[in-house]
Image (cartoon, rainbow, N blue to C red):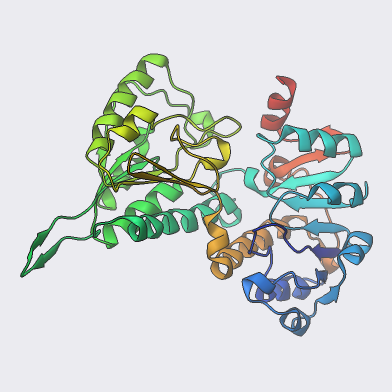
Length: 376
C-alpha cells in the first residue's frame, strides 16, 4: 500500500500522523508519502519524516501516486476533483451533517472512511478519535474560561479576605464534559453538571461534580451512548433547571451534541441575560449551531457583560499531543485494512471497517448515513 499524508488547510494546525506513527506504518511495510511541510504546524519537520522512512513529495504527487489519502479535515473544495475513483479517502468529514459531500463521493464512486463514525464499541476504543479530541477540547475549554473570567477559579484564604471559588456549569457529560469536570475541579472550582443520560451520574460524581437531575429524560440504548432527542415536556423542565443553575454560575461549558442534527438549544438569550456580568460561556457545539442561542462559530460575542466563545476546534490549539493521539487512533484503525506485506485489504466482514466506511462502489455502507441521506 502507498499511503499519502496530506497537509491540512485553513487554521488547522494538527497533522494526521506524526513521524513516530509513520514509523509504525513503515514497519508494517506500508510506503508513506508525506506532502512537503505537512507536519510544520505540529512541530514535525520534513527531515523527521524522512528519518523514519517516509518520502517527502509535492501535493500533486501525493494525489497522483497514493492508494490511500489521509488527512484530518474533509477535502478542500479544489481537492475533490483530484481524488481518483481507485483511491481511498480517509479523514473525519462528519457525514451525518455534510450530506452534500457524501453525495459527491457517492457520485464519484470513491471509497471513503470517516473516522468520526468509528463504532463506539469496546473493541474500537483505541481508534476513537472523537474521544481523543474531546479530551483536548474539554481541557482547553476550562483553561480558556479560567483565563477570561475576571475572578479566580479556586478558593483563596488571604489576609485581604476569602475569595470564593468559581461556580462552573457543564452541559453534557460525554468525554469533553468529563474532562472539563476533572480540569475544573483541579483548578478548584465548584462544578455542577447536566446530562439527559442518567447513566453518567456516577462518573460525574466520581470526578467531584454535582449532577443536576431532571426527571423524565428519554434514553435509547441503540444510540451508542449518545444523547437522543427529548420530548417537549421534558425540554421545558430541563430549560427551567438549566436557567436556574446558569444564573448562579460564573462559567458555562456547553458540550451537548446529537449526531447528524443541530446542537440542542440549552442556553437561550434570556438565560444569558440572567447571568452575572463577567460570566463566560464556552460553546464546544458551535459548529452545529451551538447550545447557546447567541453563539457564533469561531467568534467571541459579548452580550450584556457575558462573554460567549464559540470554539469547535480546540485540538488545533494543542497540535503536538492532539496529533499524537489522532495518529495513534488512525494507526489502530488502519491495521484492520493492512494485510501482510503492507497490502491494502478492505475487509468489510469486519464490523468496524464496514461501520466506518461511508461510500464504496457507488453505495453508502454506513446505515446511519444511509438513513439520513434517504430522508433528505
